[in-house]
Length: 325
Image (cartoon, rainbow, N blue to C red; front, side, top):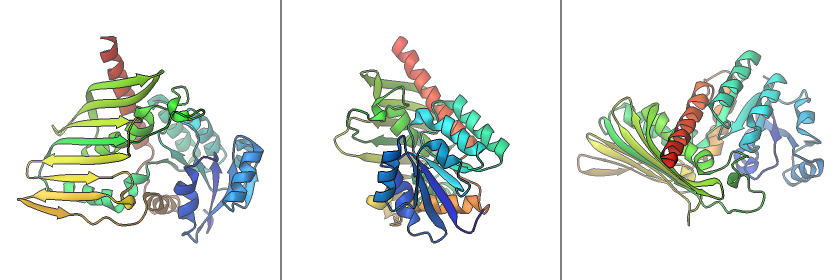
């Protein structure tokens, strides 16, 4: 790895700005070197707008460059497997946006490709790297609320049904389960371990799931519910963990830097938890840099990415069974 990590972006979408471009400006050891879009004019305009030194006329043209260390894939999910594997074969490390793939089978193929090429593959679950989520992990490990018996997690976010919006396209890998539900699924798994799907329901609108709800059962005996919706009046995300001796509640877990409320209740006392102002994307990029330098193992790569897609598959399958019945 070079002294300065050089990043190439595949996809000139809005997410690239907060996820990569903005936090990279605070890193002296990172440079966003090149952008590639589906057409050259779009890439050129994006590069000019965000002061990126180079733009590529195609995705393949950027992957052919020898001066790119990490490729950030911000494309629709239907393209994740293809361009992740191409980037890996080109010897580039990959930070791939969520949801990781269209299904667990694709995720396994991507992880296998990373293993064969010997380069890093990380899923961009930015919330996972924020200090607040780390605080939740420590409190649970220390028994702050005893044994968790039940939990609830949700993410509701208004996504306009605009022309060309891939999140309202089932073929592109959109829908509430894939685009939003992946977050509460991942959060519950990260805190409580893997689970089985007890029940699931999906509400559809013109062939796309606009909302999903599921009940999960964990090996520890804990039970949890999750909900996600693309038809919401205002953004809302949260995690509630009920234990044998207390409760942990976080409202705004997805982006705590925008004003999360986190509370620990035990022994009749309510304690507000400190919320670090660092952005989730900055925390994620910090972790990616240390992972690429071999200092830590990625928290959201490999087996974790496959397991999360497997849970998404299981929820989808259970919802279909209920619908058929």
